[in-house]
Image (cartoon, helix red, strand yellow):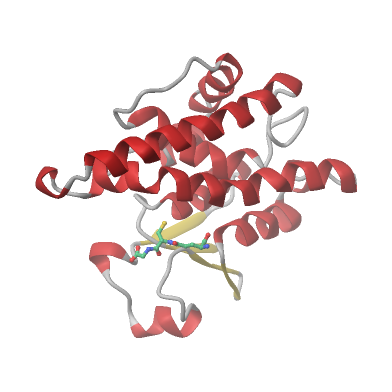
Length: 202
Ligand SMILES: N[C@@H](CCC(=O)N[C@@H](CS)C(=O)NCC(=O)O)C(=O)O
């Protein structure tokens, strides 16, 4: 039995809850972090004071993208390309997500997490523009192949899929990027994405 620790309104926890549903892995999720705080037992597993952490039949792991790779390798190898070049190209988008998250952070915090009187409009608009700028790069990749993993959906679609939900949900200006929009529409049709990712942001 897989256990996932972490509140579901966390980008990094959503990745794991979504992939568990994609794989069809029976699992339980225990709220942790944010308003739930951290227990001593949790911090003994993950001293970073961050979520998510998993326990898969006694194997404990943290770092969301490492967890995605582990779960695919153990339970769903078809979701992670075997060929080293295809894998490298897919993995790149998983790591690139952290660059995107940095760019979108101020817009997300300002528009979702902060109260209106704490909003920094300049920081929000700089962040929104930076996020939109990076989406041009993703759009170009999605013009070459249907999924970030390659010909088929896989774990490389998950990190940016989660951040794309935020990008398409917060009230910011978005350029017209048809390949990105088409990929995102196909994600929203996946039951795991709809159930685990498309939840209220706050
Ligand atoms: N690199 C880590 C980052 C984890 C992280 O920053 N998690 C955030 C939530 S998305 C967190 O734990 N924030 C503190 C909290 O929720 O209390 C990963 O990918 O797992």
